[in-house]
Length: 463
Image (tube, rainbow, N blue to C red; front, top):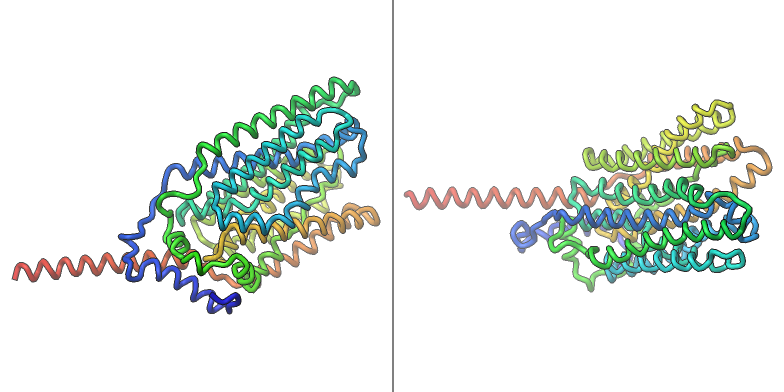
């Protein structure tokens, strides 16, 4: 298979994979598809360990003042405990997606939950004022585990779920990560009070770490027992075609090159690296952040269900992007008006659209890049999000320090507007959907031929 292909040849290749599924081999009989009830257990288990990992990311930042006091470190040091999640993702995404392609979902899930569990237990040993470096080491382990988690929702959805529920399954995977962040906003301030007694503070921090480690251990055990690589029979004809691809025809590096030569997908990569919201309301930042996350969870699920019902990938993505821009504009100009209820309403609307975009991006990428690996396309999207996230965070911080919070948020609005325009230029080519529809049409045509042959044989026997 050549390392470089034109868009036309890549389309032909996607069609050829589907045709090969049905041609000559009589796919409807030899390659049946089936949906297993176990698929819901798989995606819920994934959501659980994604939740646990996301919670560990936010647990330091939400009570940063307490950790600064306990460990005797600067705010910068505590901030980097959270930022390490972004930095580890960028260099490790390619080895992880290669491992996914070579070894499958189960191995990746075992590594993710195992390393996440190890990181949680390392933190348990860090509940002493002089052991900040141990706590940082545990967070690095959790950050590494995150690389094995963040890009998996679309891959799990494609491998286990049928064409009419694949986007909903992807949104459930994203939902787990967002729920973990929401719990991270709520639980640490409850478990770790802001007190001056260092011994009592160490006790409360230790309790928080023990609870997290216990949950991470339970999830790891469940993954070892329950989690499967893939179902015995694929859930869709698109998956049949991918599984029937000869292994010698596949090259990971060639796949990366094809993805980076896919112009619609490259445009999606650029637009996926969107800026995040600067809350601006310091006194109520935690509550506003929680509002953003909870409304985003609802948005993710609704967008996933909507995609399964309508298959309007570009239209929905463009609409959500545009509404994110409008919501960000309204939030920027209302956050400092002094009307808290307005801030919460606009924050909820902004979170609904900003987070609702996450599963949209994953699923749109899969459609644009089929039959390439879903994990690889999602990994590239997340890599873009991490790179642009670091750039936007630094640039916005400089603007806010030099000018104002409003100027910083307008800076983000400009890039959301540019992202909306770029999204409008993404050429829609729903390859996976086309492969499924073509296979269904071939199957129906074959059944019709069999019925006609049966009727013809019956007439001849009567004669």
